[in-house]
Image 1 (cartoon, rainbow, N blue to C red):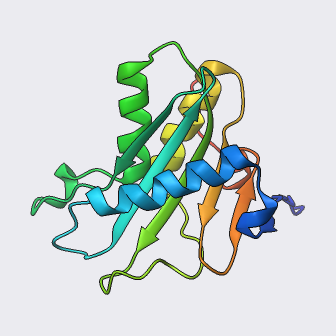
Image 2 (tube, helix red, strand yellow):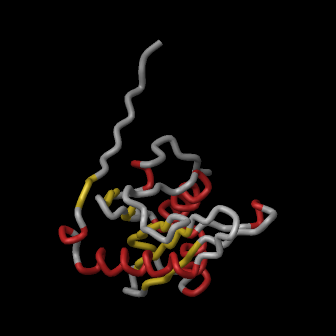
Length: 157
């Protein structure tokens, strides 16, 4: 038996080190947290995607007493982008969250497994990675593709 070593690269940055496009996308994700419907978890998540055509599309988590009927912010933004611009690749996604007290998360939050799988599908479909910006007030994680968060991904080809 041998070990398989998996390696991920995640850059840690401050907001001012990012490009103006990256900063604007993060601000859109932060703003999208205000649209969240999180009456059960009180954890408000916003996401914003930047498309290859220059458009930005936001999404936020939407909860339901039947938890499976809700949707995460990441999928909300990705699916809205797919509905509005079905043939346009996503270049970047920014994710931010607010706690129950309204304060922004100090440390970045990471997408759930379902959202990661959706991102893998989008990357596979368009044959290009999606840059992921995970926002926290203390630091921002910059990831150059979902496979750095989910290296043993499930795809059908």
